Image 1: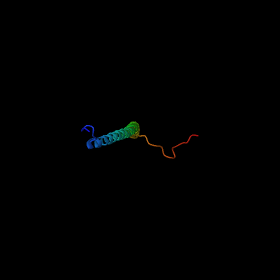
Image 2: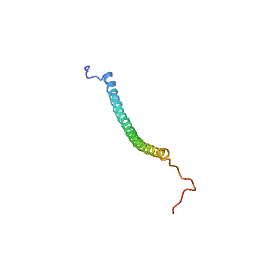
Image 3: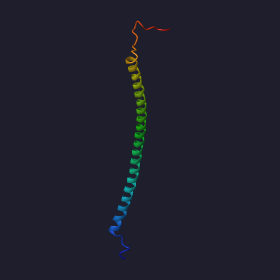
Image 4: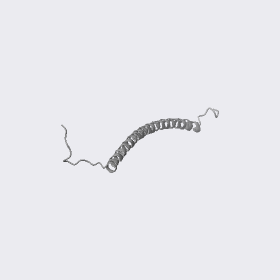
Length: 95
């Protein structure tokens, strides 16, 4: 038997080790893809929340501007035009 015909210990240890490394590499690729999808889904939900918050902020700014203008109208009516709310006796209820 020649040297290349004998099964060597290095060869018998190398093949199972390479198979083990191949399986571990495949499992790590699967895990990384799974975690990447999880992170993408989290990113997408956070982007949706951000968009919703930005819409709400826009609505609140419009509401704030509207209330600010109403307050300005009320202040001007009280100070410049000397308007006041009628008392209970001055109010008339129309049916």
